[in-house]
Length: 452
Length: 139
Image (cartoon, rainbow over the protein chains, first blue to last red):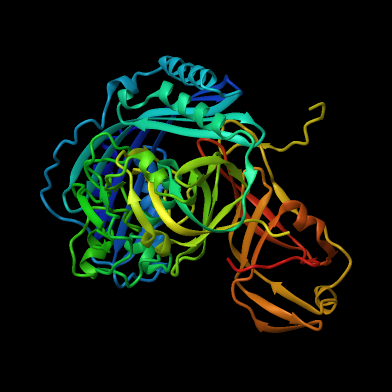
């Protein structure tokens, strides 16, 4: 069926679109080859391979924008798609604040450690990794464990009507393991990276088993104010949402609590967050964004001050600033969200808490009001009550019902050791981007529970 | 489980595994009008839409916060009320239903399940329901 190779399609499609009369065109073709090993109750149940090929077409004529996607790599499919676009485009209104795409002779500096041939050729060795994780979990207290190993390679080819031609490849591998010790006691750990050496199945299995063992016989605790230590996994959901809210698209569409907060204090001075597309070993690193601008390392929140929103070229021109190389052509999107480590050892974070909670995971972070930042999130897997600087016992059936700006302001200490995590249950404004964060201690957060 | 299939397996594409999951799921109607549900309330809240829905993975602890919401006073809809928070257990919610309206409203939605994610179209909805003697809170 394919009469165009993946690397040929973008250039062909851009030329054709210009002949049709397009002002701006970007074509971005992606080949994803991924493998997956799933395990349930200590047994491998599914081994899968996926190969997805697709091309995103972004086209502008007289400020009228169309974005679409094709999966057949043939000249006739491109002709049909462009013909449909130009019939359709007559009927849509112009986007008056559209300001064009990037134009430059870009040079792409190689990012170390974003591709590992060992991952691309992992094959049946993936089963050994999973068995290693399961056995490690069982040795460390788990009665049963469940999870998934995903791994693969992504090839990207990009052409634009402004003369940008670029290509990139990255690998990634992510192991997620959840151990159970009873009906309501579990522990979850993720280990992931762009190199096989970054994925530590024995460690992830052992940690999930250890946490699940500590979580046995959880008790109820009352609603009220608690200091809360968030483990990195618990922050994947929360801080992914914080990063998503810094996209100018979130701000303009009323989905951001950072609206009108540029250059203002939005967090404790102990909190600094950067967005990096160039961080070696981190899952979302890539040489260029969706319009071909070389990725950057951007200070987004520094010592509690919101320094910038995330932009593409068009939105940056609108706000008279520079692109942060976060295209997304419709919506600028975060790359790796990196929290600056503090100086607190993990045990010292716990020692600082008189009455509090240690939250190892969260899910279902949902907002009542995106602009105000009112939200709730559900602590998942193990939660521990801390009394007088020590872990007292596991607890259950609680919810954190807070305001995200209040939570950021309440950060009183940041741990030393960061881990890479991601939210697999991301709700807007979180787009599921990786978060690299140490544990964080927040003071006096609002804990609620079901009323009777 | 010793049961027969009820035909609930679906996948997003031929190369994805089928998952047992919802298709078109809605609460069955009762016999009363919505007006009758409201006129039977002396002091209450009418929640027309909600946000911030979440639930734990045991599907036990539930929360939703009303958006378009009004006080009900002596059987009549009164002034708007801000962010009524419904944070209850699942048995409390379903055990508190004392009346179900007869008019079913359906809406399009998406069921998200699987790894990798398999988002699939569903229809969902139901009639208005009345919960008795529950506590609303503001978080």
